[in-house]
Length: 270
Ligand code: KIV
Image 1 (cartoon, protein in one colour):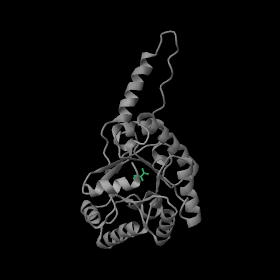
Image 2 (cartoon, rainbow, N blue to C red):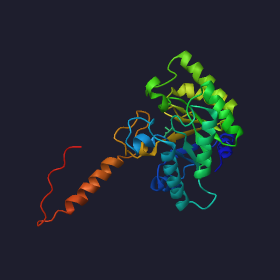
Image 3 (cartoon, rainbow, N blue to C red):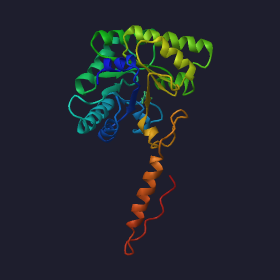
Image 4 (cartoon, helix red, strand yellow):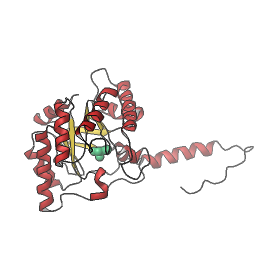
């Protein structure tokens, strides 16, 4: 799958499904499940690395996870049949200057099998960066609405809640299309606003917490599998993976207790 194939799916009226992954195991699982594209999202800073926000993850860490994800995907896909692999550009790898952004995104394409990068926002500086990346041959996916890298400015609340916010969102999505993005993620906005955005865009609009009327959906796989301790309200789990794992491991651990072995003191509540 290539970036342009997502636009072809939109034109053909076919839905686009994107799942995140962070290592070989999750990469193999989401590829085997049939995702059209796999995003190594910087949400891994929170879900996998235990940070409070996405801000601390570095480009080297993203590359490490992206390469591992690609190995997992390759283990279950015939060559050339892998889902499109997209890697998030982490905070401050693209905001400081267009040259830095080209170097960061170039590293992603040179040092991993990712074929595209995603970055957040649509401020004039970000649009200039996207234009430069696209002209350098680097496919870019945009991301508007709730942008977690701006948590200290905008929080995690629903965006585009009022008319000025909705007009801004529309301007941003259209500007991302003009700047050359091959698709745009819209996160945590009212469904009717997303539906209107989609109708005005030629490129695919991929929603998360934005209703069903988008061209496709993206989900954080750890949320869908119920592995994270708290899921966002717009991404309910499909199964209670964490509770199932804890229960299975507890059963195994208790099957290991042996009369001659001293019983371990009760674990502190965690
Ligand atoms: O980092 C991520 O996982 C994302 C998705 C929420 C789209 O950006």
